[in-house]
Image 1 (cartoon, rainbow, N blue to C red):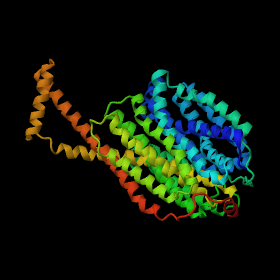
Image 2 (cartoon, rainbow, N blue to C red; image 1 turned 30 degrees about the vertical axis):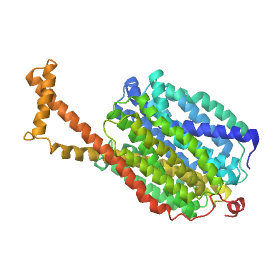
Image 3 (cartoon, rainbow, N blue to C red; image 1 turned 135 degrees about the horizontal axis):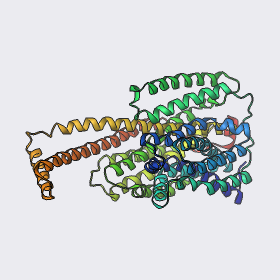
Image 4 (cartoon, one colour; image 1 turned 90 degrees about the vertical axis):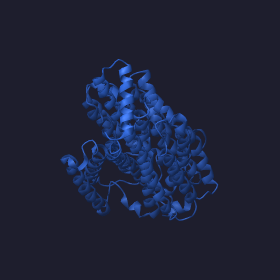
Length: 517
């Protein structure tokens, strides 16, 4: 059902636009949380539910997109999802209380969850099998660039207008995408028929995924297993997801076709996609926090810091698609991409508090080259060998693993960061004591400096101790962030041997093979 000419590129523009705005909304609100908190009169820890609600809804819907597309018709479901996402964006901007905003963010996430997986399925159907490397690279524009551009765009909007406009900008874009989608997107020829609705499976999926996502999103805030809520939801997620897997493997009409994971290639690629999500989302999270907390960057400066890497990715993605079409082995590209990503985090683990814009430029450019080399071949390999009607389900599971990888990545990184700050602070304090000549000299210099500015001796001493403690805390935080970057480096390097186990072969499956599975 490949398209050609004008219709083909209208579909491409439509689905990529929908995927980009969905991915942008995963990170655009991060820079506006303080403004939302002030406007709505909510605590900063409560306003974090604006992020959590969207993430939970997203991960619930993604694995069900194939089922829902078969139930309502892919074009109808996709168009309706765009409209739900757009309407929810409008109401998010008009929310006057935290409860309203969290509710509409959840609804927005339900609509947005379909945009990612269904967009990729539509692209794969729009291009011929031989052109799928190009389709995968085009889809990568939304997945890789969206989260990176989110803070930049969000920072500019918040600085130039007010936070509701980070939602209002979705409205005209969403309406246009919905009209184009309904007009140009066709129903697939190999849509999976839907029999009896598996309500038990749906309930187990919602309970299991929602509980897991809550634990990952809120675990660090609530002190992990010191919280009865986290313990209860952890147990709930394990039980519900175990029952869900058993249910889907034994029922005649499953809501999620887990049998597609019999494809060893899909299962292995889903694991690698989880790792990519871990690296992509954790780095997009940790770099802005590092820049703002330690280097004093504002939201706009932080966004501009990430921009060069995004621009490089914009050019590398189509190049990766082209060289794959010419026969470049996927294994070589994935291995190179993982190695470059590990190099990027290693370089960041060597920076200091004197780091400027150019210090980040090189590592982020390397990341901008490496991520497309990971994403495009893995996305393509994941569905190679699947029957045409199974591709939407394979795509959905693969995208769910990337989202879960991001959630696990951020949860692990924030927990490890908090732990390392405590450890490094204690280690540094062991060198700061009243018998240390260096400590006494530093306190004396600081005290004289504050007295020169008009403070009394007693006040100057207090200010000197506070300044010394503040400097020590900054050093502890710096060392902890560097530990995080080194941790992610080791994680990626440890995965390199696994990539060598990928079976060598064609990077694109033939049409006959795809239909014969």
